Image (cartoon, rainbow, N blue to C red; front, side):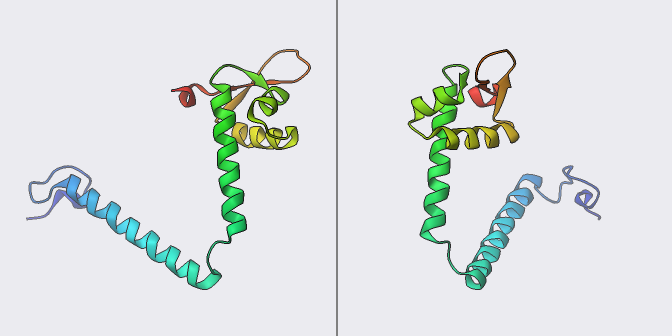
Length: 122
């Protein structure tokens, strides 16, 4: 008897599709862990400098997104509220905009205003 899993993800009676998917996810995690271990051996561990940089960037992104939940704001307004330098806030907002986390509000103002995307507000 041939298993229908060969033809697609339908239930065949021989296998539980959900447990197979779970096993596959666990195998993927193991494979990723092995690749990371090999990368660590080849390149060395991640430096504290890089860890601190990424942590600061993540903290800034969260602060900016939290601030934008209150409504649209300009870069100077975000910088004042998040207590970050304006140039850094502009850099972070540009990245958040590029990856679809925030959008620019159309209008004629001295500084463009940015708002959080609908999916991020929830």
